[in-house]
Image 1: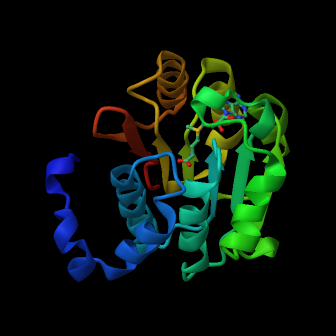
Image 2: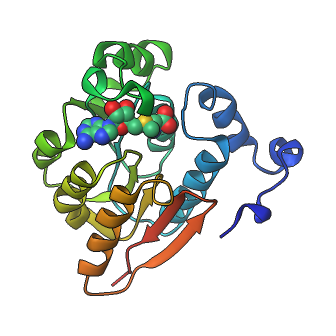
Length: 212
Ligand SMILES: C[S@@+](CC[C@H](N)C(=O)[O-])C[C@H]1O[C@@H](n2cnc3c(N)ncnc32)[C@H](O)[C@@H]1O
């Protein structure tokens, strides 16, 4: 899939009013570009249309912009879905979007954007320490937006097996960070059936787990 198939920005409100509203609300807070949010939305529509069960997980939250976007998708789903958010927040590298406190991000999610607290879970800490506590629940969409081999590998080891057949993994820094790409490729090759790999732009890459 490539960006040339996107609806021109000026026509977006006519063809996709729902997405347009979502982007207007969340893109100014997100670090990931509006184009990449649009692509996440496209993957999400497939998950919804194909009735794939499961929650949404984001590893790499920063100030919470893309998390609010995903939270809105979870709210509007016809299936009961929860949102799980992982970040080291203040301990994260400020140059990579870290540095906001978990408290500030919760304020953004719950007070500013009114996400439903009972359906959103925020884990503060390094992925290497937190993702292993993810409960025994299926994942329909996993957005990985971080850098570095070790952290990404922990996510794949712990969360990869939870992604439902037909569910999506969206890796934001696949084309931009060697560690992310290596951890992703190792995980992809460890899966017995081949995944459909869809690059988007220079950095984002999406994988749909084969349906059984
Ligand atoms: C690019 S930012 C996320 C941007 C966010 N998805 C958005 O679009 O608004 C990457 C985040 O990943 C976090 N991060 C990177 N490696 C991590 C690790 N090993 N454990 C926990 N958090 C990590 C950083 O703290 C940072 O906040």
